Image (cartoon, rainbow, N blue to C red):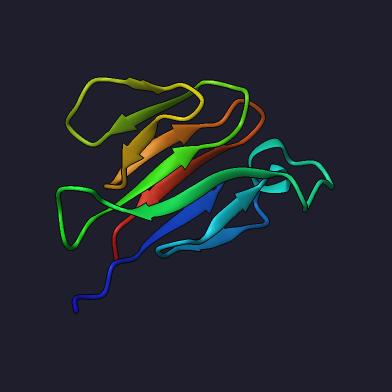
Length: 100
């Protein structure tokens, strides 16, 4: 089985998160608060790509993402975004997805 992973570097200067299947982002990651229990996003296997991952928005906010070489996209609650090199704006926190 191929290894699927990505890095999310959050620009609040404190977090780099390894994105692997079934990993979660808490409210703390996307809102820069102290809520470590509320799940804001879940990493899932890509439904059509054996080596890919998606990040599913479990928050109440719509995010914006700017994949390299593509137009800005929006990720509303319960929708998913295929992880690839891109900038992400969660609202209170911005970050960058990197594919090592």
